[in-house]
Amino acid sequence: MKGRLGPIMLAVMLLGYGVGRASERMPTAQEKLTRTEWTKVRGVNFFPSYAANPYEVWRKYDHNLFDRELRLVPAVGYNSVRIWLNYRAYEELGSKMVDNVQDALRLCQKYHLRVVLTMFDSCGIRPSKDARWMPAVEAYHQLLDSPRFSPAEKQYLQKVFGEYATGYARNTVVQVEPDSHFMTLLWQDWQSSPGKDRLGTGWYPRIEKYVDALLGRLQNNPDILEWDIMNEPEFVSEGPLSATRMYTNEDFRTVEAFLAHWHSYIKQHYPNQLVGIGWASHESTRAHAQLVDVFNIHIYGEPDKLKEAINAGVVMSKEFNKPVLITECLGNWDFNLLGSPAFEALSSDEGQLAHYRKLLPILVDSPIGWLGWGMIVSRVNFPFLDILYPNGHPRPAAIYLEKMLKGN
Image (tube, rainbow, N blue to C red; front, side, top):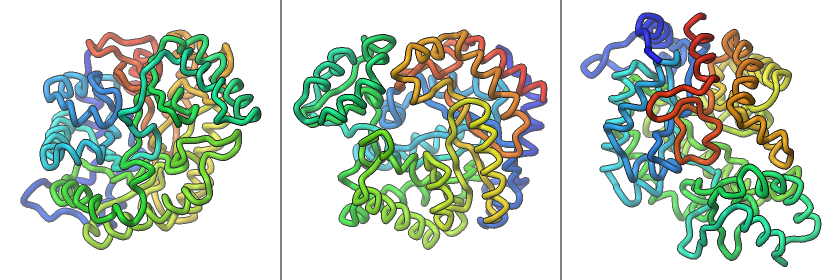
């Protein structure tokens, strides 16, 4: 696909807040809020093809490949990206990781893309030297035979993952530890950051170095839309632990304290930075309104569910006088279909295109800005959500997306 810079540049002008770079005074947080056209955000969660998770994005950072694949983002009509950072990579690389992030932001500027930076992530399985890699079908049967799970939990395991692990994903490689939760079938190589065991107050001084290194270097970058403090904090227990609960009360209190601390820390030391939190549910987003400048909501599902979420977001935005972004949506994914043969159909080219045809008209006309999932087929779990191959060859959904975004 060949990108046309005319409409893209127009979108960027609408999205930007019209300030100069480097020598000019950077805007305050309130100026950023009022000058940014939040409703014009049309973007995507971006992972380069060499990475299986955010840790590898920075641990294996490849400038040339990142550049080559990032240029495909505006070519389909997007004007923004959500990029994920990783505490473990910073532990290993220190300032070198920040160098890589800064380089990636320069590339975003090159392609006229605004950026949401996600600092922490509750989702995933913490890596362990005791982990053993095996096909999902083998892991499924091993977990099903484990005495660690109750009959009710095994029934839930079968309901959610039976069809997926023995069908579509049977040969997908997952890591299993002696005490693995069966959600390892979902997370595959995805890793939490900083990790469930590092959310307590004893870790705050060490994590402070990570926060200071990033914001101290990047706080005046006008291409940053906001800092997303954590992705989907509800998954702190590596759950769900049942059909209705994704966390224990104790774990959730710990993650709430973690979020409150870093919100306070950023506002005290970097008051001009805008922050959000990528909650998985609307209820959690509303309940923690005091911790954000920008509401971030995630929504997957059918058109009625998307419309309901957009309407609720508009109401919440007006009530609290804060902008709202949908920072995850659009992907042809439904957790409730994992245990159904319909999931394999949804993941095909035809299924993805049909899904986009139902949702994109709603998003294009949305009064809320949004970032979809996904972009480049990579090693990240669930590559069927992506719309372009690394060489730029489009899946049918990408062609439809470009037509919709560039025609509006």
